[in-house]
Amino acid sequence: MKVINFTASRHAVFYSPLIALISEGFLEKYEIKGIYHTPEPNTNVYEKIGNGEIDVSQSAVSQSWNLLEKNISSSIKHFALINSRDGFFITSKSSEFDWTDLYNYPFYYVRGGQPEAMLRFGLNNKNIDLSRIKHVSKNPLSTDEMYNKFSNIQNGFFHEQGSYPHQLEYDNKGKIVGSIGDLIGPVAFSSLCAEEKLIKSDIGLRISKAFEESKKWVQNSDSKIVAESVKDYFPNFNTTSISNAVKDYQNLGTWNKGINISDEEYFKALEVFKFSNLISKDYKIDDTVLYAEE
Image 1: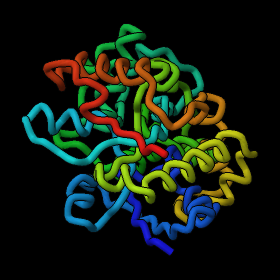
Image 2: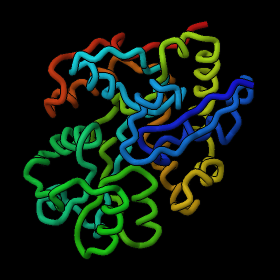
Image 3: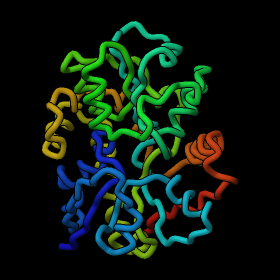
């Protein structure tokens, strides 16, 4: 049985279709043994794929744009859409919330890269300028640092993917009051990537088919069943918070598309990154996306 090593740029319940690919045995049906390597923060998955440490990873088409902006060629392409929504939520200390409140209290949000670009674009749709919100620290904080600080303040806001917000709700330390995915709508947020030669191979086709089955299963199964399947990969969250996160993502329509990235989703991602001046031109979908074929 062929062994394929998987990892992710970010480890979150938001990527449950990737986790379930392994935990539910979808790969075994195609004679593949999958091993998921939980990433450390700020993992460069392109480097791990390039040096052969990892075969397939969760990333985003925007990561390829970063290389294209520097005129760096890469044989790594995206071949399966994971999430067609932003998966970050805004958690408040109070259930009473107005978007302008973000100006008045500490806002712990993920700084840099795609999370900040999506947040900036989404908030602009509510006439909120992220640049006017004072940073809570000189240097960006890790998710754990933000989570701990938010847990112990009286007023403020926290920006992260599930199940961090859902665990805060479970522990009565916060209330989810907003979804960036709701503000932006369909967008090419995250996808599976690998070397072109793997995508074009029989193994790439089998992985694609298995992932399509996993994604459908995660979207359409009872959220409690999905939570039970992936919970061992998230020891810091209880099953209820995982289940609640899965349910929110199902309702949001995060996983209800096929594995191909639509033009609408791709162009929206381009729009988001141009808004933050992170890219200088529109990159063609063929520059970053390649599908396995029969």
